[in-house]
Length: 583
Image 1 (cartoon, rainbow, N blue to C red):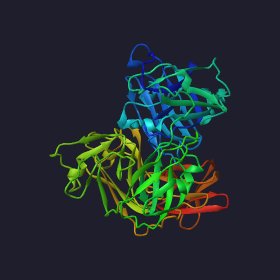
Image 2 (tube, helix red, strand yellow):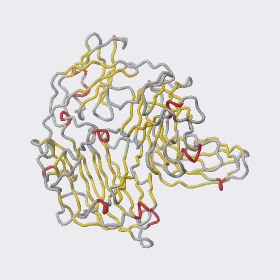
Image 3 (cartoon, rainbow, N blue to C red):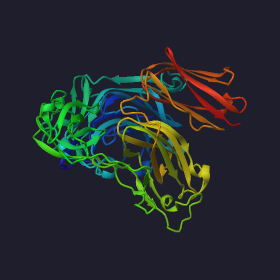
Image 4 (cartoon, one colour):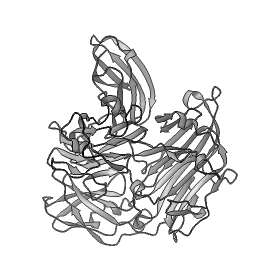
């Protein structure tokens, strides 16, 4: 489609060649803007109609702090979206993302680890040659990507390198089963015009035009820029603007439109609270927010924060601006959220969308409400289970740092057979439900409750992530209670080089999942012991990078029913857990 005169300008970079199958890799850093979408994807350019649609996406949305979206789009423009709750922010550093496209599967990788795979007839329909593309754009779909804020322009996405591997089963030396062979790589030292072209088009649902000026090469990086219609390219003439401020654990967090200069962003003189004393300012890891240590205030009376003379990384200086500091909510536990539904008399709070000023809410997703006559089995809270939020990526709740009990409530009110809706759930980036099929567990219109303990919050926000396997994730309610054994603010729940999580489910009689968090890359080994201390199974896990890792443990590794111990070992350190196998 030819370029239209839109108010905003984005960028697209695409290969001239189309590819059929292969492994596609990129090392990149996305743009931290709550309305931007950064892509690395393949796409079949068709002229006939959507019946020929073939596309495979890695999408990073600026509105999410810790999330990567995967989506193969098949003939008829059918989406098969899933999310991966990353253990890092994709906006603050470079990470490697990849996907393998074969005739029978598409698998996605983050920093060399496979995190999602799709198979089946819809993958087999991805059989048309596709060009490799990257773009930076802002959609018109606010419920998906957020609402554009012109004060936060421009947005930059940085691509360090790209590699393409041929699909070469039986003859390769890279990727899954060594089925791929390196064809070419590009370090972006220059624009290789024989391989790449810059996009000059737009499409329905896109708030911007793609212009060549916004695809820039600098310092051995490809930089894709999202700008207004005047200030094009890799330039920034707008000063940072403070968006909001709030109290959290007797400190004040102030949020800005963009990344701050580390010197002025931590200068106490640039922050003033009338009636209180700002003792120190620390730039947070995003780095679009700062944490203020404050004295002479009880944090219960309303005050304003005045910000001035703060610079961004392009040396633009902020004008003085005051914002009212939002006080911390003193929750009465349990917190009961009616996901997809209204406030009801039995103490449930209404569903709402997440925003910087809010206390809780969903990101993405749709609402479904079923008939008031629908009988929900196994509960006396039918009204909660008759509403649902589906297709969401994330649900967030602001709580003080500490340890919590979380109850997740589900009902399958739409599908009438198993294997129609399958998804996983993560609490604070730890997978707690793996491939949940509500109907397979309890049938139709029946309450399913999953309880979890020892959920540790260290950043003031309890995050529930959903990752689809088949169709859309769904949830009816969330209940949060403070755990009386909670840790104190400032203590680390995950000390050392790695931390082992409790297997789930436990007890189990089919399959359980072992998960652990790697804080320092190392070589790791798994071992399973009986109560006599005898090793019944061992596995060398190899060299693992920083992040969340998990693997299934089946029944073949066990003998008789009973208690077992399992361990993860790194260099000089071992952590052990206990599980119960029911044969």
